[in-house]
Image (tube, rainbow, N blue to C red; front, side, top):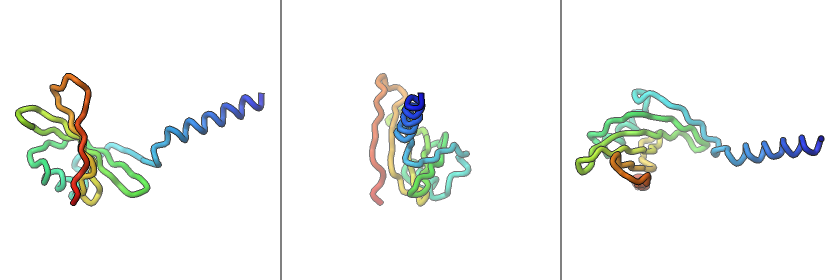
Length: 113
């Protein structure tokens, strides 16, 4: 019985370790609470974009902001998910076309500024 209990505890520990997300802590925040540098970076790249949602992600390296926004591109509504550093550097951009029949997203790396 002890062996079974120890095996269950060990399995739980391994599963927890595998699902840990590199010590990331995510929380949804109000768009108005985004740092100015983040908003400025987004507005510089997408001046007509409407920011819909925002999350603050705390990692070992610092804070990253994941922002969902909507733009019009070639006459189509496009949703973007952008990761921006607290300093305003765009780290990652994912595009999802609203009228796409497939579930594939376009992904590109951030600016090299």
